[in-house]
Image (tube, rainbow, N blue to C red; front, side):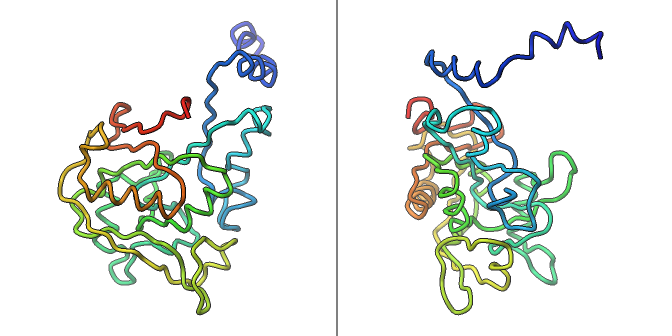
Length: 247
């Protein structure tokens, strides 16, 4: 370990001080979170959570930067919903006999939905706007980045989960805690799908009209604009409607 000290020493510094000075000088700072809001130890679907806080507020505690320095929060979500492992998943495309219905299987295969570390297959389902609303409120999301829009190409109908029937009542936002979701029934809004390809599209106006309608409806339900859209795995296959550093 001591032999590496000279190589490591230049990389060790007072991080809160460095961030403060960089921010004061007008430099751009980008913090990236891991996992997802519903895996957060305090605000996730407990007990199906991770061991730490993974919401935007954890940036301040983890990096040592004041909350007033964070001017924009980008919420990243797929154009459909996935989950790894156990836990409630109201909009999951699952069939008791087939184990996963054809649409869910298509999303998993076309979207390469396997854990990057474990290779474990992810569970797939329709876009859950009601769950996203909970995440948006907790994180103070300024704008959305919708990824994997291209995976939805060719679907005749697309569905958006807009709420849940729970105990005879309808909720338009994800209830708190996994227990509250037991036995709930998703409420859907159906929209026409699109046959045209979105793969690699880099201009919003070149997306099929139905795809644009889908994105706009998500923004309307969640009351947050869609600022970025990913149409493929490459870095440049991205539509930027509003740049986070210019917001």
